[in-house]
Image (spheres, helix red, strand yellow):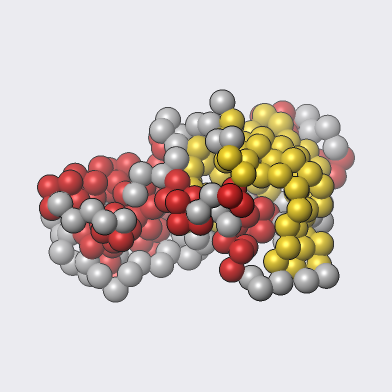
Length: 248
């Protein structure tokens, strides 16, 4: 099954042509790793999937992007973002307790039943591999958590609203190897229930967790294939050069 079907996508910010003639599918329950050097269009691509680019006044888009058979431009932005959640590079906990951080989005969508909130919070923390570390301190400030724990808290906050797709934008860029491993473990487990798109500058991370990998360069999709093929026998020399660290 296909979560996103993208055809002839072009994106501009003012006169800058950031994504060029992009066509691809994102499959349900896969981890799609997106790699490429800086200014290759990776984050713009990710933000397009839940219409965050719309916030820029000079944004312009042409082409077709369908989410589960519906044009995303015809889907209410709040509805789309309920179904397509995003985890950013830097963890951004709210100045609230651990519990209230995770429950925040659920409450914003009108759910105030204490029993259901508690169940959602516990499930989300378990899925983010954080429950065992915080279950006895849910009333403490989220700022007392380590950086790695804060990032998994932000993942839990996204999961609590029960999206279908999770977008990760460099989620481990500021984390130590142990915290990175926990986030990666969570991602691999989460794909059983969710579709995941991971933008990362860490090609080893892309190789570890991605089912398929897309290589972007200067706003173009150069190659998209199974991750093991991308990393062992890429079709394009530029992909091979990037993976080997010859540029980027």
